[in-house]
Length: 275
Image (cartoon, rainbow, N blue to C red; front, side, top):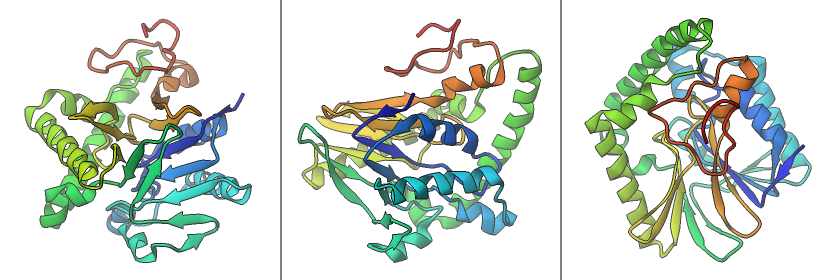
């Protein structure tokens, strides 16, 4: 049964890479609908395709077709490009098949809150000032994902659920924790400068929905590992949905709790895992 919301926010899908969880995203879009959908950057990974060559399986095409089909049926789809699909920033205000491109936007919730919608790479000093280092980091992330894939194949044979090395590192490594905290503070400050009540962003692949100094900081996460999205209910409540919890049920794996992962409110836990 399809669940309806007022607005859906998705980012960091990274279509065009082997790490994209396109099937899970299609599954999510099939079961969730809204009159307005925001694509908050890095939907297509032009960096990786330029470096590694063209990679575009049918499932990635299905994601695009699903979004275009929603747009044709009247869904307002707003695309706010990120650094991996930055070439679209040259087409601000242009519509592609009913999908509108905007550099950034100010979104008003049902209860009157104003939220700045922005990918967030503009406030990542590595991306802005050291492009070569950003590309090197992207290559390292790709290697980590490749290593993680083989590790999880072994876990699958043992009947264990998916485990993310990069997610563990973000929570445990001091430098990564500090980077995330600083990023959140800077984005909250940017929202404050615009007179907004909060900010919705992506970029760092770390989902969040919390208050920072009186500003609502919301990060949509990604569809590479965490498989998360933000939805707005009809009353303006913003909820973070963790769709990665579907992985054990769909793959027939044991729902073994991940000690490094905090449960997300509003998302039912798989059978056998505490909510």
